[in-house]
Image 1 (cartoon, rainbow, N blue to C red):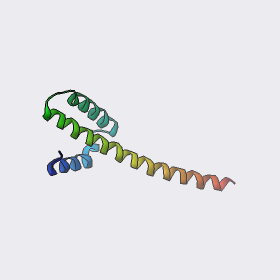
Image 2: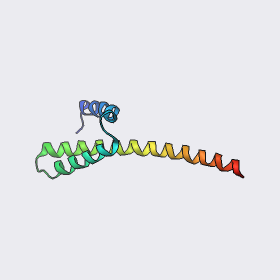
Image 3: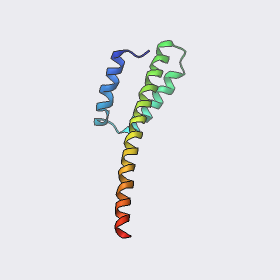
Image 4: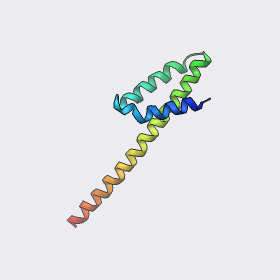
Amino acid sequence: MFTVTDFLYQEAFLATYRTFMDPSQLIKKLLYRYTQLSRSSDGQKRKLANNTFSLLVRVVNELWYYLRVLLTYLITYLMVIDSHFY
C-alpha cells in the first residue's frame, strides 16, 4: 500500500528527474527494477515492485500527455501553413 511519504517522494522525483536523466533512461531503469523485484518471493520486494510499476505508469502517462499536446500543436500549425498555400 502506498503511504503519504511514498506519494510525496514520487512527486518530488517526478518534478526533478529530468535534471539528471532523460525520460527514456528512466523508463529503462524502472522496467529493469520492476522486473528484478517482481521475481522475488519476498513480500517487501514485491511491494517495491508494485511501487516501481506505479511510478512507471505515472511517467509514461505524463509523457503521453505531453506528446498529445505537442502533436495537437503540430497538427494545428501544419493546417495553418497548408491553408496559406490553397
